[in-house]
Image 1 (cartoon, rainbow, N blue to C red):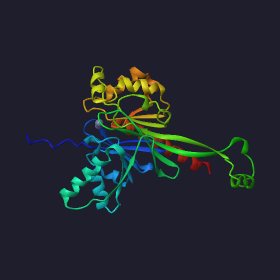
Image 2 (image 1 turned 60 degrees about the vertical axis):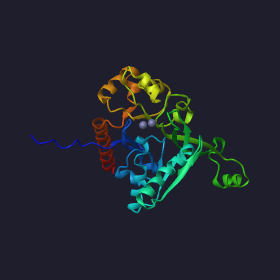
Image 3 (image 1 turned 180 degrees about the vertical axis):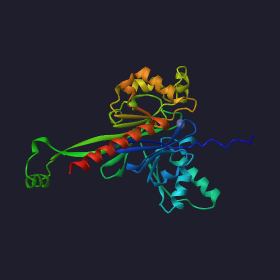
Image 4 (image 1 turned 120 degrees about the vertical axis):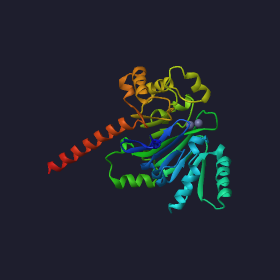
Length: 310
Ligand SMILES: [Zn+2]
Ligand SMILES: [Zn+2]
């Protein structure tokens, strides 16, 4: 007998939740890197997969190694590939530590890796794209920690003005009258590592179309461990699910010990099938692959139908 080759690990999880993709890797304590291509942003950089290099921003939830281990490498590779400096977004409270880490690599390498760094405080926002903002909020973990909401800001013509000619509207606008209502649509929320609490019940988080959340512990006896590590347990997730208005909840940061089939069963039992059907496990490759194949098949049929119409 000769030794076996090593297991092929590190396959990236992938979910298409129109119009957004969530792709990356996340196992508790090992590494978490999530990339949302449509928003040009990564959340955390536990390690730096090649596909994450294209993101312009990397927003950090906190400084634990499984969330920042690949950060310097990500900046370095972006530079190496001629993609320009990456932009790190982080909590104001950890700015010096992140800069210190980057300086450590500069000393070790005897060369400078360029990067941009933008800090956010609780409730502060950063523009990702036209009309699209990244808003930070404090969470509760064993070190300074933040979650994020991606918010689309829309304007809508006031109801009583609808149907008026453009000229008239322009004139009112020039006079300085407010002719539109401002509304915001929370597209996606990301919790990072956190205890449950009021921060999960904020309107912009609770009503986000997609919630990407950690849930580290599923074992029925592990509520206490979750509390000590300041993480979510599946019991917390189920309570939250009852009041969240999201279309999709993507669960990440599950411990390696957790059997995903078992976790799915538990969730079905605790939350009921209907609520549980909103929940996706990012790293459940087989289920997500089957779901994607179905989406592709539906899209193909639709295209065929449209083509046959004319
Ligand atoms: Zn973690
Ligand atoms: Zn952590």
